[in-house]
Image 1 (cartoon, rainbow, N blue to C red):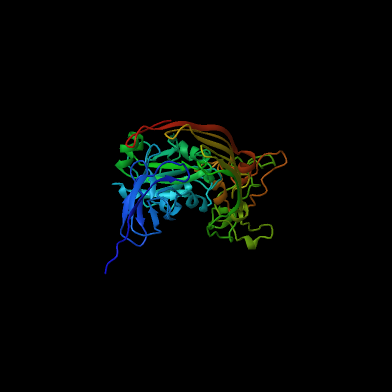
Image 2 (cartoon, rainbow, N blue to C red):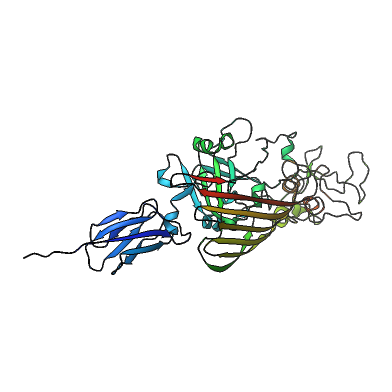
Length: 477
């Protein structure tokens, strides 16, 4: 005996649920059999099935596998959803071009937006630290808004800028920072003054969708000479075409920072030096200056930075102060953001408003940033799409003098003998009180000589995308 099973052909088209565009190269298989085919460039397929009530399985890179009971239907329209877990293997290389990571012939590291956000860093450059192999991030100061340098595979030039090219949605961002001499060179002006922010700090980390790090010559091949040191490509979040409705997301975070460790200092001996007979002698700010004239309350102290005086415990008028520990504070950063997304079959938008308020470990130091970002995309037809982004950022910084700087924080703070109280920094005339004539009091520096900056910045771009054919598309930005 034998049986004959009737075969029939099922046709159909497979589309992306979000955009409605046809999906080529989708594997179509009859479940439980070896009958299979793939969709053509227009997303269409024809498959001969053997079952009376066949179930078709659709699978493709970057899309969620989908099973569809065909029943008695001869034609199917199948919409497939994106698979976010598989999309981690798709990277943005240049000019917004997405490619499978395994298909690239050069080294590349890809990070998701959540990886950036989890670091808690307020600077998108600093958030890459310890996240990608071969990438070195150098935070140049401990104050809010301080700049960060980034190197890929070390320095590549003896002179000039070694930082990689920073690209955000196809727009280059200048992240230049000035290098300091590696030694305590007194005539190096970069060791003076204030640590200014690098401008990549204007980017709100909550707006980042993904980061791609291109290393070596591949970056220069894609972006030219400016990417000779590598390239870091940020892709920002946008609304999803085809995702109907309105969505609201609110996020808030609090970060507390403190000094990691303090130097071990003695608290035994007072300010002073040996006298002519080799005995310890106290030298305080109230002693006569080198001209032998006694100091009045409005004079600058001709004391000494040396702590070779008598034991503090031997003189009831002397007291030991822990100036370094009492100077630093706990820094607090409050970051709040609201995100509104919406879309339809042909249009989408995303609006985000973020506000950062950060105080530092140095008294009277802070960095504040307010960012408003709007993106919009519209499909004019099945092959033509336009979109634009506008981003307004206001950032202000209150920073102290730093570095090898007589008016800076650290020289006056760390060289103070333990017998002097730096927190008493005002005299009756309103001028600073300091233990030694050449060093400013760090409290006076922080509260009376800060550096203030206020930056208003607008960034944005617009694009036109046209799918000319299956092999060619055109994008203008």
